[in-house]
Length: 625
Image (cartoon, rainbow, N blue to C red; front, side, top):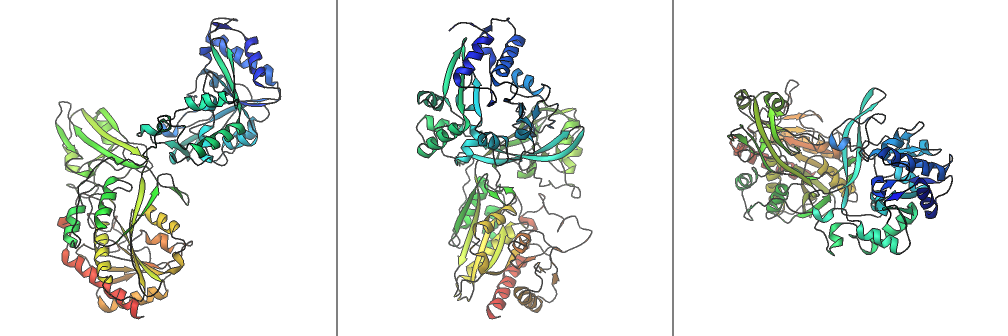
């Protein structure tokens, strides 16, 4: 192929592909691969003649679009549509900065356009980069023409088309960040249909698909200089992707290229936990409390599987990216290693010595930082000098370590080395459900949460109490059916409720269990419905059997999963039973809450056993009501 080319060659190639005046065109480009322009050996000349070629072919009534992707929110950077430069090269910047050009307010995959359709294509787009209301939906509806310069034919918009075709190897992920628009800042978010970067089998592989499009005539290719220009209509690309994925679901990724089926949910860590079939509450707590139990983690799954040995349990799994209301099931977070050390290699503290030394969902980070920078990323407990706080960075693209106030006070060197080896990957949010079938389908729900990590009173105490209650109920004849759900707090309840819409009308009420191992009085919190039949029954029974305990109104003692059950869309009277004493001055329900001080040493086994007996008394009252 000749090393030189001219504007006339470009114009001829564009017309040979079928471009015409007034057309809507999207162009990815790598102009340098064409070689040396006849008009002059410089990048500026090459850029100019490409732009002039498109302008001449499309005319003033045509619309030209280019990628001006920034990945701003992915990189925790502010996105300014007027100022943030494109990462897609000089050509995209030239078009973006043309007089009259418009740019979409997409903080990850923005597009710039020039021409009559520019405004309608780029304004008021949704937060979904590749979903309804996106630029790509509008481009498809208009059946725009994809014209790539020295790039694969399907490079443009194929993630949008994969999503429409139901690709299972990608998932929606929300990125939060900040927009800056004409000097005014505001928070925002964007949803990216992304891949698992830690799974090589799911990496994009378009070469074979590109060859297929050209071989079948679905796309065209014209050589220019040392390079080429390709073309295909968006609707034709849609048809080809839908046909391909229906026949070969993994053809567009590395696994498909190798003729393999990818393992999408790959375990990252292995834990050996075994509980006897009749494990006591002490044995369950001792075996499970030190496991990393972040939602979707391998530790959470192992803990749930170990509990399933106690009673027959149904496992529900909800994949990363699943939409539940306005929320998305997140990725699995796995931390392989985290530590702070001196520059000579002395380890000051590490995740190996305590799980809470790194914030949950911390981004990976390795490097030497100043003491000042370290302190900006180092969390301590505000009230307990010797305790490590339990911190979560969910939805925050940042890194953080945690230690006690005493440890931080000893950090006097100018610089330190931080090592956080963590990763985010596709996974499943798991919920365990135990069902004791009664004479009636009408059921009562005991709701417990198995997270967070390294906590006993918080979460785990309710789980092991719930297991013990269900074990007793399984030996009785019951009028009602009983369900115990063990889940990650918040999103786990939302997933289970969304997955059990047909069951909701059968739920007469429920009881959320938490903090039951504390050596404090029991507290019964009524539901948001207040005066429901279940509220009246349980309140009366509670005051009869535990007259010295407290009955409080909704939201006073706990604000956990009962909120979702009580919500307007569900309307299940869900009460809660805890040992959280309401106090307007308390920042947390008990001093050790969300800290390394919430250990087995804090457990009062007599109080936990009392909790179980009180729950059973409440169920007896319900049965006889």
